[in-house]
Amino acid sequence: MIREAVRPGTTATVLYGLIRAAMSEPAADPRAGLGLDGIEWNEVSDLAAQHGVRPLLHQALTALPDVDVAAAFREQLRDSCAAIARRNLYLSTELMRVLAALETAGIEALAFKGPALAVLAYGNLARREFVDLDILVHRQDMGGARQCLSSVGFVSRYALNRAQERIIIRRNRTYDLLSTNRQVALDLHWAFIPRYFQLAQEPDDLWQRLVQVRLAGALVNSLPPDDQLIVVCLHGSRSGWVQLKWVCDVASASRLIGDADWDRVLRRSRRWGAERCLLLGLALVRDLLGIVLPAPIVGALERDEAVEHLRGRVSTWMIAAPGRPRSRTEETSLYAALASTRRTRLRIWGGLVLAPTHEDAEHLSLGQGVAFLYAFLRPFRLLIKYLRRLPDAPRSVSAAPPGG
Image 1 (cartoon, rainbow, N blue to C red):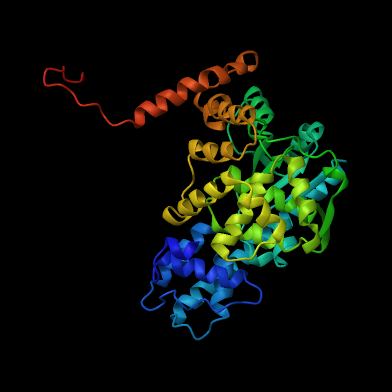
Image 2: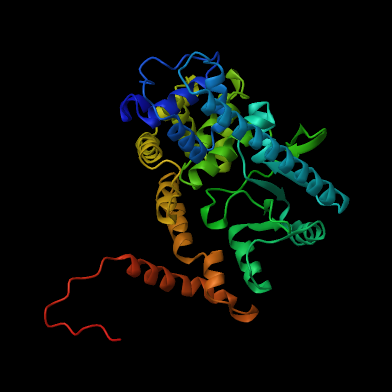
């Protein structure tokens, strides 16, 4: 549990306690045992920013007006959250513009994470911080969608030639775009997870189960609560659970699931190949936010020792290095441990070694006919990168001095 991992009176203890209060229903008073006396509130705010939970911190402190917090700090936090709300509204307006353009072009699309998740799971666009937009289209529509988005002011985020773009999109199943005014990052997906990270095929009925979310005065296609929850857990697991925000996403999305529906959600997660991702996300909700889990989830956790081990590992990461991006090795290690078969684990590790990234493509430009060589060259680039990180080996006295 979080209280066992950090000492009372530390920045992390105070932040986690306040976020637990904000996420609890009804709202709880977190002051007992937190050690609020003498706390550096600017450090709490900085940590909240790293975790993407400033709106929830503001909500918790607003519910505790008698807590000894400087008026200037409360005003600063309020202003920060007002700026987040304005930014969220701007991004939502851009999302609507993009979706309207895709619809005009006859391209079916759905929005997930970002504004759609804020409205669906939090009930308020301003309660969740997000920095970019995510849209899913059918695989066969990727080319048309890219052209459509180019016509409304979105270009590739990276300087890649056509051959590089093709191989990156095929392997990563996403195309990273940036508005020409550089204010909006948009990830265009044809699948939720890169091919080498995929635990199982996404369900065939995904597009038949969409729901509509009212956003900026219009209806937007998005995922139903069970698929939304599974995708949030997949995203957190794939990215190493860097931010507390993602755990709050799981908690908020889980509240949309009825008590009698959890067995169905578990079955659905198995169709995604993501049962362990779901269980890990919900275990973190229990451990970090103190939320009681439904009986079917508790039973599934008790039967899976791997998830029990991983949730302690992730909790330690989040507390010891808040907001620090995981290395690809750390992400892959965690994600591979969630796979149910050895073959899947080998494929995931193979993706780390062989699947080219934008950095590989920018490091070396290969033309159309030889772009396949990225998969062969990447292991050597990784080896060189690793060797450069090693400390200098001790030199003998007789070693020749470096040239120069």
